[in-house]
Image (spheres, helix red, strand yellow):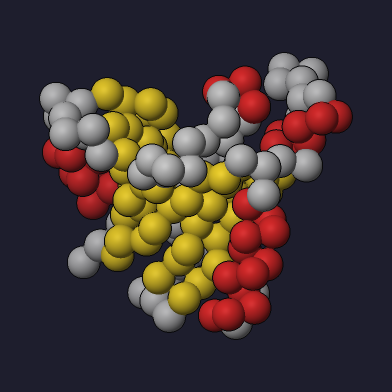
Length: 143
């Protein structure tokens, strides 16, 4: 069965927020990836955004709390609006595909379901009701 995990967007303070969450929940981050970690000739990243958090995950029991900084080019996150995604961790690629294609039907795909730079099979979309979702399968996680 799939596990649902919260995914929170931040205005450049994701690391600070996650250090706070870690101090409350305990544990260690499973992944911390900065935008600069992806820098290459094909994907240049300016110094101003290199330390922005692309992906951070903190296990809480069998679940993950996931977050990222929204790139400045996309504009600031309105902190009075819903700024979260529902993140679903699928047991395998087949389940990820079924959930992604089923939930995104009639919606808007923001990132197609494919292998991600951080090692998961990942996709992102807004469903037909305006709710934002991410679907992923991490082959390193055994459940």
